[in-house]
Length: 364
Figure 1 (cartoon, helix red, strand yellow):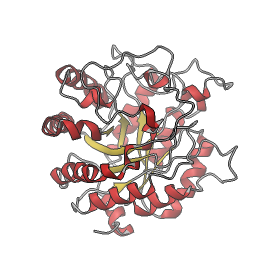
Figure 2 (figure 1 turned 135 degrees about the vertical axis):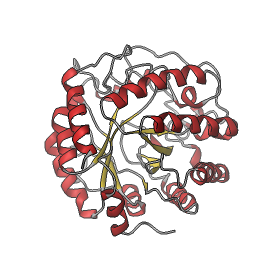
Figure 3 (figure 1 turned 60 degrees about the vertical axis):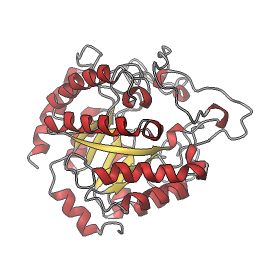
């Protein structure tokens, strides 16, 4: 199965209402294991029922969630049952899931990687850190940017993971699209996109998924637009691994946390691919990436959008990334998230805007 033609991609896009969703981590979870493992899932499910009601109440019709390979590997049957349960929760609210298979943001020192996950209770958050805690230091690492895909003995199980999930849901209307690889090339070092060791694994993952002949589109997002002051690149110019991700994608997905001017220029650049656009991460208030300006733009341009964060919780994504904490920015504003843990809106005007524009987009 080949990459969709432009005509097929646009036909898919035009047959749908505007996608307006969020990247979703339940507020009581600090990591993917805590979301998807067997231990404590009833508590997690109760949080999800309540929080997805909030999402739907403001007009969201989709969520994007990372699926943990390690949980599937060691708890396969239970994981598939829990995934089905999440899909039922979403469907009952007329929402869809955009699953993400793999993630380069998870790269880190090889010495810190444990191939056997620690199931059960997970660490508690450390106050003041985006993500729930500081990065674990390992200054003399033999491989500071390790990902389990670097070890090709993991590839057979990675293939089974992709094909098990995609095969079970290849014609499932509850699945919006398949996000093959989050931020390909993200080295984990100051957020720089200077790591290409995932390239062959990403290419393989696209093949594995396409072999299941899913009716949903495939994508992997371009994202490395934060360091243009240090790179001799124009906004929208892609690194080698990003370019390959776009070539393999049916839809062009992207991440951007910059201001409105930059967002417009990036959109103009990505339109050169002549495919539907989907922004799968946005909303960064200290960077000037605000809902008041961006949500109307995405609706006008018919760009599906997933902002980061729903209910503030253990991952503490209201805090700034550690690597920008010393910049002269206004950190009195939350970086991400829309609701406090008790369901109160962080910014009531934002919530009103979501409700109004999501309603308009539904009748597109």
